Length: 137
Image (cartoon, rainbow, N blue to C red; front, side, top):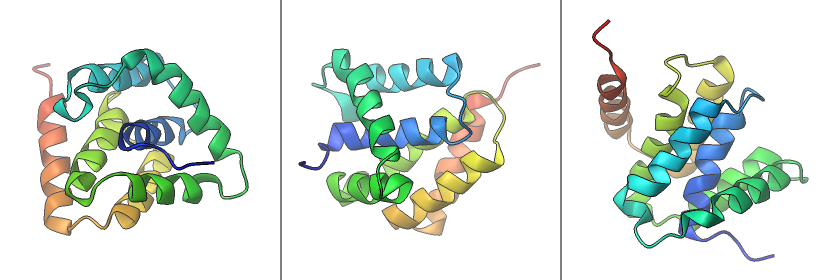
């Protein structure tokens, strides 16, 4: 089976982050859709494929290589210059419910390793995500 496209791989990373605690909430699923429809990296992507790609990712998670296989395939499919964008997309999904569960933290740690993102960049992405999700009340 061929590896995922870059778009598919980006979606896989958001899906595994959402599914890490075995509870893909409506809020997380909606955020994945929002990212796919609004981030420039998805320009030209047919968002009608989103459900199928998410289901494909779920199937891959249950295969022998599991999460590590999905993360490795995604890291290979996403151009190096977009690895920080990939991490930002996954973090966006994890942060949407304003609660970071231990399982999500663990998946994000694994993701950082697979994508080889520098610590300074990780800090910047995390800071920007927290700032974007703050509320007045």
